[in-house]
Length: 61
Image (cartoon, rainbow, N blue to C red):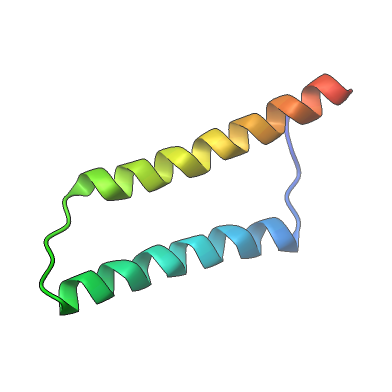
């Protein structure tokens, strides 16, 4: 089942991306090293949330 995202969904994804970039910038300014694990975990969390929402909507149909 496919889901249709509207402006709200696009806004949430964009805000999440901007927030992550902002946090990475703050960490870089504080000279805190961040590996790729934190980025991969945030992407995984977003994808799991999307999959969960799709699954929930599919069961409702």
